[in-house]
Length: 277
Image (cartoon, rainbow, N blue to C red; front, side):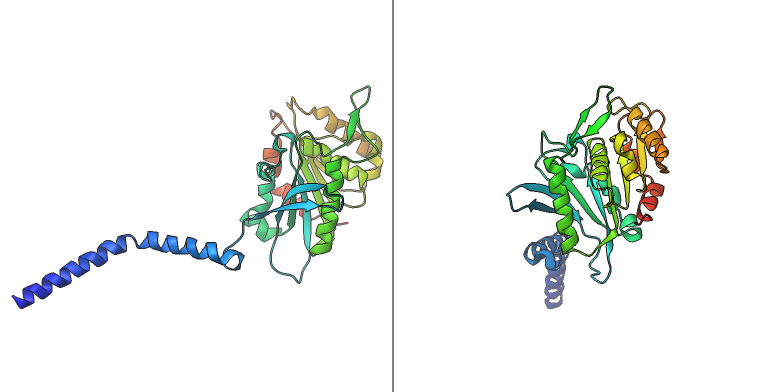
C-alpha cells in the first residue's frame, strides 16, 4: 500500500507539471514582452523607421520618419529622400510609409544598399513644390520654395551635420505630388543631389539645362489619368536638347499607380545607389 500511495503521489505531481508546461510558451512570451517593456532600446530592436519632428528656430516643424542603416560609425552611408503623394499628407507621421519607401527597407536592400532614408510628411493643404501653370499647361516653378520644401532642406542639412552621410551620394525620389516635388528640389538645388527618380511627376522644362548633369530616371504610366505622361515626354525632350541622357520608363496599360512597378524594380534601386557626384 505504501508503494501504491507513493506511485499515486508521483503520478499526480507529473500531471500537475505537464498541465503547467502547456502554458510555458505563453509564460515565455509574457516574460519577453515584460522585459522588452522595461529594457527599452537597450535590448529590443526599434522599428525600422523611427518617429521624429524637425523644428527650426522660427517654431516651424515637419514630421518625418528616419531609417538608420547600421550601427557602424566608422563608415559613411548614402542618403535617400523620399517624397510621398498627395493622398499621404497629414499629421499622423505614418501615412507616408504606405507606398514605395518600404522597398528601401527590405532585408535584401538593407544588406545590399544600406542607407539613411528620410520620409517626411507634408501637412494637409500643402505641397512639396511651389508652382503654377503657364498658358499652355506647362509647369512653372516659382522663385521661392514651398514651406514644406524649405523645411525639408533644413532637415536634410541638419541630418548631414548629425550623421555620417556620404554627401556625394544624396538621392531624391518621389511619387505623384512627390514626383513634382522631386523636380522642384532638383531644379532649386541642382548641385546638391547625386541622382533623382521622379515617378509620375513633372518639372519646369525651361530649367532643364540646369539639371542636365544630374543622372535622372523617370517613371510613369501610359494611361495615367491624373498626371499626364506628356509632362515626362516634355522633360525628356528638354533634357536631351540640353545634352543630358535621362532614363524614362513608361508602363503600357498602367494608370496612376506606376510607382508600384517602379519601386519594385531592383534594376532601378541598383542604378540609383551606383550614382555618385
